[in-house]
Image 1 (cartoon, rainbow, N blue to C red):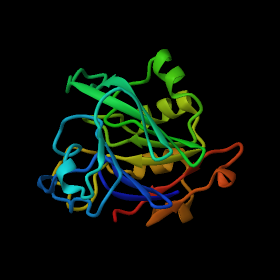
Image 2: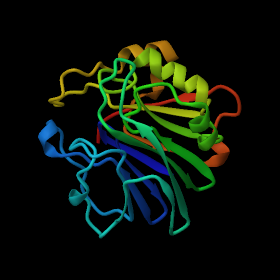
Image 3: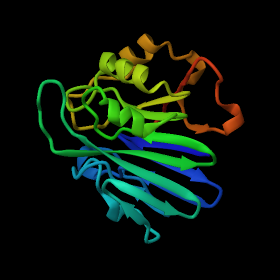
Image 4: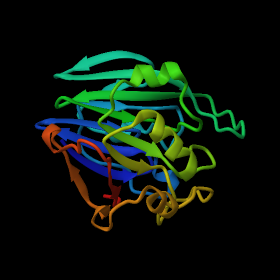
Length: 214
């Protein structure tokens, strides 16, 4: 499995010939939207920095709601959540996705802004790879993300939805505080792509990767 990050909450996950893209964004946020084809696109909520499915070519299967989905050997579960922080910014519905691919469970939290409920944690199960927002304001901030990581206990952690060069959404925090507090290794900072196999996953301590925008 090869993971590439385009910015915000948008990742490209490739497994063999299959490509899955999460939360493609509009150029209106100041970043270059993802390009290319995909087989599956997931959308966590209906905001223009997460729902620009038209930019993805290849007539992909769009998943934008709760439920169970299966395509080409990849299973996806959408778990209902709310796009809200502890400050009560109430931004509507959010969908958390668990993607079963190459015998690994990948969880994309979308714009999660609060700790998970017990039922949500149970629905996630054993997560291998976690994409988690850390930029605050509209989502979890660094400290809150650490609390949620403690709930989920993933083996690999990749932060998302934070301030980067070019992004016109200026309220977000940078990733630095999160990376420092979680103890991200120097060699795992600003990585272009992350390649994972089940047998490579850490057995005890988790591994953190801060990705460079593609």
